[in-house]
Length: 170
Image (cartoon, rainbow, N blue to C red; front, side):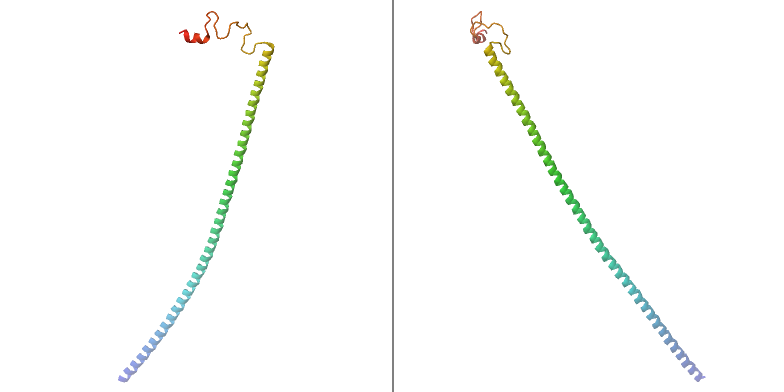
């Protein structure tokens, strides 16, 4: 019985040893598969990360180009508004200058017309005075009646002068 036990034991040991070796081999295979799978997933993640990084860089470039384009458009619009405002200011200045010249011309013409009317009136009044002197006819405001024979400044019934009447009657 002892021999049987020994061979059973050594058979059990070799079968345990074989099972342990098989389990170790299976564990190593499973570990390699896990490592290979992990490496494959890591490589795929790195590839996706690289693609995302490139897409972000491309997007940043596009955004930068859009910002520069927008900035250029804003500056162009601002310059156009400034140019338009400057042109409008010049136009308004020209209009004001033209109006000033027109008003000045109108005032000058009105002044000249007034001077001309006054000259005509003076000329006409000079003619009237000359005609009156030549013909003895009364002028404007004169009655045409007989002129007093007493000296001017003396009142007829009293013989008092005008200056004395004003001062002495009181």
